[in-house]
Image (cartoon, rainbow, N blue to C red; front, side, top):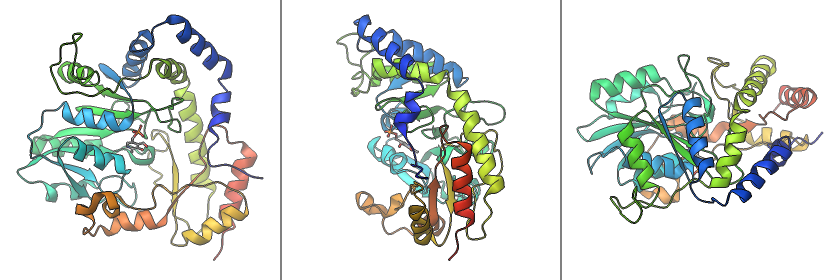
Length: 364
Ligand SMILES: Cc1ncc(COP(=O)(O)O)c(C=O)c1O
């Protein structure tokens, strides 16, 4: 029974006629840049995230960069960021002109270890960029306390956690800006690139709205050196439609995560944290094993798709030469051992049972 890691065509086919209808409406509108679809989606997504404002952007990396730039941090700012994250989180800090300071994650949650943050704080530290990696919500209570005690801003990379809940709310509590990606494979995915910033602050909102449009809020008047990072009008119309189904999608993801967490039983495999099954966004189901190569062989023989998020830690990437000297044992261990198994709403009960049986029968 071949099971792909993710079949985007199948996922979007479920909404075939509605997506076609949205496209025809867009085509007919004659409004192809920053029209009513972007405006509507921004209102709906801000409401969904229980936040005051949303600005649609071209992708998640821009959302992080513009989010950082909107905060007017001092030029020599150091930004604390988890060492265990997708490269974009760290790249965004460099692109915004600041210095990333890498903090080890907690081995259970894979997210920034809040007990290790304060030892990295210097006079130049201006902000924490936290990441809800794999859809697991960060410890916002601890992050808010640290930000308050040290007068730091909080940026959240929520590219993998649309719909995640913390303390009863879909808002990343205490965040000055929260950045989302709508890359097609995300829990809320467009049919191309897309991104957004969500914030409660009117000044930040207005600045990011200007920055995404060359730094202009009045036609041909430029108040900042911005970029062109406008969310596509047609993608906004698809996202507006798909947003209506996001809670249903999350429900299925949480059900699958619960089944995996209950039924995968193999001493060679470590499962992700069981805390907050019903509130995390479960973008990925990431297991760990010190026998990854052998597990890959086993899954391949059984035709089960998988991915590795991620094979090389950011601080060991060629592009981040200045960080290559760092030794971050927890981050490195995670990168050596993780493997993501299929987790999406198209999985059938028999496919799930087959995946579970295959993992349970893995031996070395
Ligand atoms: C954690 C994280 N941050 C940032 C990004 C960047 O998003 P995008 O690919 O839309 O630029 C991604 C997307 O892959 C991500 O997973």
